[in-house]
Length: 284
Ligand SMILES: C[S@@+](CC[C@H](N)C(=O)[O-])C[C@H]1O[C@@H](n2cnc3c(N)ncnc32)[C@H](O)[C@@H]1O
Image 1 (cartoon, rainbow, N blue to C red):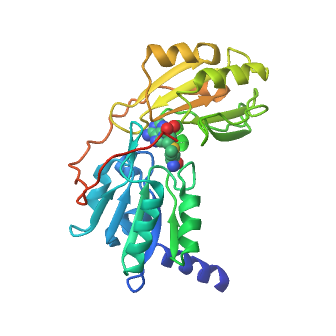
Image 2 (cartoon, rainbow, N blue to C red; image 1 turned 30 degrees about the horizontal axis):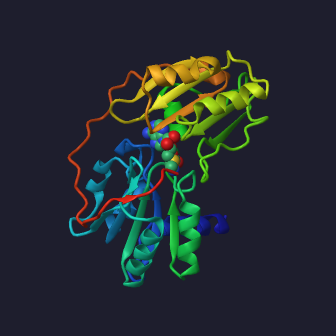
C-alpha cells in the first residue's frame, strides 16, 4: 500500500515544473481543440519560461503561458519550416542550460509521429533533464468526435497507427495490417492515398472496405467523409481534402457519423514574440 502511495506521489511531482534547474518538457497539446489538453499540460505551460510550438497546435492554447514567457514558433507550413530541426534542439538545449523551464509543445502526442523520441534522445545526450507529458493523439480524438470505436468486440480486435509518409517519401509495408477484424489509421496519408489503396487491394483487402476520412478533427471546419477503399482516391480529390487529415480503414469506419456538436469558439491567440524567418524544408 505504501509503495503504491509513494509511486503516486512521485507521479504527481513529474507534472510540476522544477524551479531550480533548467529542463525541457515535451508536451502533447492534443489534436487541436484547446480544451482537449491535459491538466498536466496546462500546468507545464503556466510554469514555462519559453515555449517552442508547432503549426498543428491551436495557438489559443498559448493563452495559458505567462505574459513574459518567450513564445517561439518552430512549425512547418506548406513545405517551409520556421527553424530547422537541429536549430530547434540547439536552442532548447541552450535555453535549458541557462536555467529556463522550456516547454516543447507538439500537436497530439509527442511520441506518436511527433519526433518526440528524437528530441528526447538528443537532449538527454546533452545532459538536459527531459520530461514528457502525453497528449490525445489525433486518431483517438478524431474517432471519438465521430463515434468510431477504433476497437469493438464484434467488429475490430486491434488497431494500428501507421504513417502514410516516411522520411524518404515512401509508404511503409501495410501487408496484413487490415482485415475484417482490424482497424488501420493512417496519419499523413492523403498525398499517398492512391499507393496506399493499391497496396491494400494487392494484399486482398476488398474494395468495399469502409474508410472514414477526418479532416481538422476537433477544430473549426472539421470534416467527416464516409467512403470505401475503391472510392477513396476520387473522394479525396472531389472533396479537396487537405492536411491535417486521417484515414480510418476497417469495418468500424462504417459506424461513424458527422459530428453535430458545435466546436468551442477559438479565443484570441497570442502571436510568437520571438522573430523567425521561414526556411525551405521538404514536408516529412
Ligand atoms: C506529424 S503528424 C503529428 C501527429 C501528432 N503527434 C498526434 O499524435 O496526433 C501530423 C499528422 O497527424 C494527423 N493529424 C494531426 N492533427 C489532426 C487533426 N486535428 N485532424 C486530423 N488529423 C490530424 C494528420 O494526419 C497530420 O498530417
